[in-house]
Image (cartoon, rainbow, N blue to C red):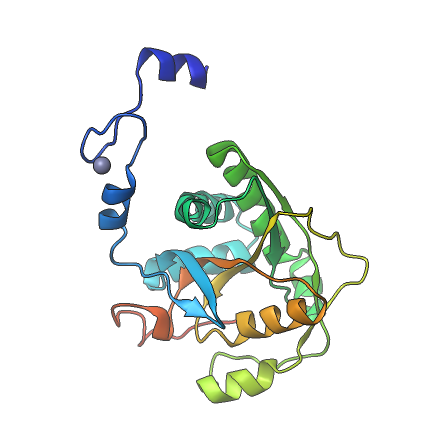
Length: 232
Ligand SMILES: [Zn+2]
């Protein structure tokens, strides 16, 4: 059906009518110019949304209320953002590695929040971008960490130090697959930095970071600095 539609109505850039694509790279970069691709621990971070009141409600609904509509919406937006990741880091297959919550939080919620979200993102990425995309919960928490929401950037880094390890039984990446660490919200980068460290120790080299939302020092504007940022 999709192929037939494309035959009848060849796609043109919605911004400038350039044939052959829905949004051309030039228009896409203009449309997305308010979101940077910053580097965290040397890796590019692709984020769909800025952290603000509206996105914080979506994140909380998906995480704490098991609201699948909110999770699917975040996954759809994150998959749209994946287009740029795919263009800049082209692979035919990708492995998404979700940031784990504490065992206590998974137990309390009754589900592993980021594994659920990563699976929704992988499904959206496969259908939108025609690449193979799977999820491997490679990362495991090693210990209990303190709630990060009231901690300074420095204390967050200390709090997350050696907090993750790699599951020896975790599914390894297909050779040539892009390894992408996925989180719902990146604030100071301390969690994702720890995830990269743990993966590298186990000889996994992440190619990029993907998050539904970005806050704090990675924002180009300061709208969310005053909003209390919830954490795992
Ligand atoms: Zn265009």
